[in-house]
Image 1 (cartoon, helix red, strand yellow):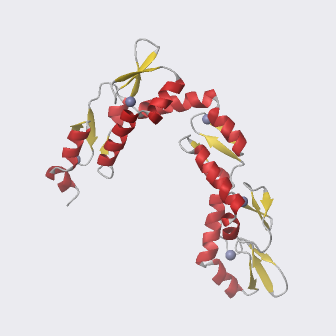
Image 2 (cartoon, protein in one colour):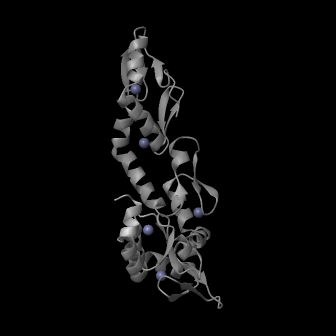
Image 3 (cartoon, rainbow, N blue to C red):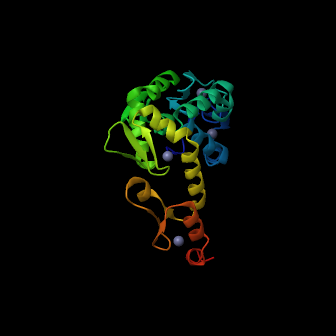
Amino acid sequence: MKTGLLYGIVASSKTRVRCVFCGVYIPKASKCIEQHTNGAKHKENIELMNENGICLLDDILHCKPCKQNLPEDESVTKHIEGEDHANWIAAMDDLVDGEFITLDAYLSCEKDEVFCEVCNSSVNCSLLSIEEHVNHINHRTNITERLKPLNGIFPVDNDDEVWCKVCDAYIDNTVQSILSHIDDDEQHMEWFSEIEDLIENQDVSIESFLTLEHENFAYCNKCQMEVMCNALNIESHVHSDAHLNQFGL
Ligand SMILES: [Zn+2]
Ligand SMILES: [Zn+2]
Ligand SMILES: [Zn+2]
Ligand SMILES: [Zn+2]
Ligand SMILES: [Zn+2]
């Protein structure tokens, strides 16, 4: 983040300067400018710019999502509270949720595109382009490959099916049926929500269990010991005195 004293401060008249980010005028005296640029509101506006795709071009603020320049007297805070901007951000968050697409570089104005991690490619940052991208079969396939090892899904001898270790169930080996198993199968989702609840903040890892077909154990990093990877055993482990003692409780 750029934080130079005069970052965002532009000349306005003989006696005043303007802070572009806050949309306010300040007396042209180093002391006043310093006080303003050290203020919490000013710093918050700079942070919000970096989270909202608002860039400083020369001495005007440009909002990339809204494709418009902000009027002189409009602060960053005021702009992002506007309906158009807020709607765009909400729609975008919705669209990229769970899609391994990162907006950070776009929103901080480093890049004009967003990045899809699973496809290892840049995507034009419009709602339409991203919607097309996430629905494309190549992206769905890459997402499936990324999610399999996080969900305990393994290939079997016959290529027509895959095996879900968590549910001990066979699933058609198609992108659609694997994704719908991961996202919609009740038993599958329940297993994850129950186990994840139990191990939250307990430093117990289930990664090897999910990625290695023949691994039957979760691993407690605190106690440095294996625990059978099912809700009953993990529950009794995380409630055991030996485990709790590791936390100094
Ligand atoms: Zn300011
Ligand atoms: Zn905007
Ligand atoms: Zn992709
Ligand atoms: Zn399953
Ligand atoms: Zn433990």
